[in-house]
Length: 225
Image (tube, rainbow, N blue to C red; front, side, top):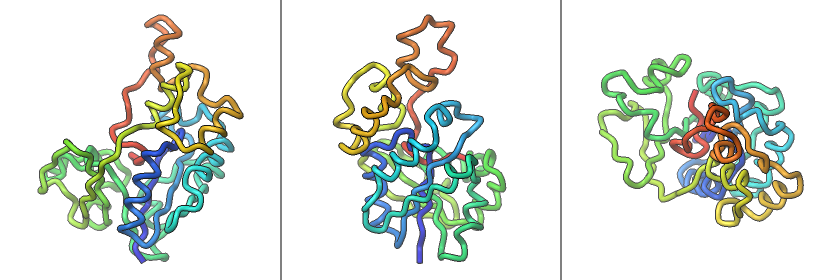
């Protein structure tokens, strides 16, 4: 069995995440959606309590054929590295790590973020399998691809950052999130206050209070570890 590990913050999960999962489900026997726990390098990940993020993930991906939502990171308030995920799921089948093209740029020179920034990244690069998601306009050098990889073209737009920005400004997210996700966010008032990681913070506070404002995600929902 070929298992795609689709990890990320999904904070919140949008229609773009669901579209990616649908593409992956056509390619692999099983897609494991794994929302990550708190991350010291991404402050916004811990802003929304895990219980809400877990519910949102279930609402966004639940019932999708071939897709399983795995909440062990949220339940344990941890962030499982990719080499640990490799070991965790190896007994179930052939593990494929879902990544964006930004994480493989420079691979031919040994300078890709996977090789230089991930724990045991150089070993994973040589031995693990990677499903590389490619958005339109993001061309790559084929020589940068990991030895065991496939390139999966996408036609998907959107990011969690964009959704948070819109919610923080009080804008509608009908085109960005599924109805049940929108209803849950509205019911509990999630993401409505300007929070770190949203441009809405810049609108509410002076420039000196905007240290946490971030740029949109390079690729929605793809874990970088």
